[in-house]
Length: 86
Image (cartoon, rainbow, N blue to C red; front, side, top):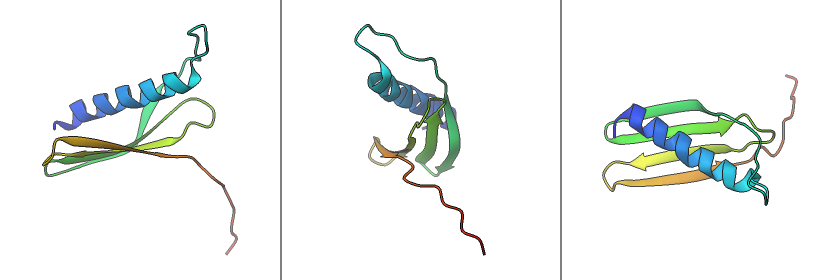
């Protein structure tokens, strides 16, 4: 899949998931943007990590398997942030 097309599809998938979580009963939701943290294309496969500009937004790792024509989404939430002095 073309990398630009893949990134646009990823942004749409992530945006929809965030909307589903944040939308209240009246259909209201805060404004936010989806952004790419990292992306890579190797041969027929694509991978990207995305997040959004909402508080405590998770990271979404999206992988497209070009051989099978399948896309997988993994969601990660930051568990901790520690400073370790060396």
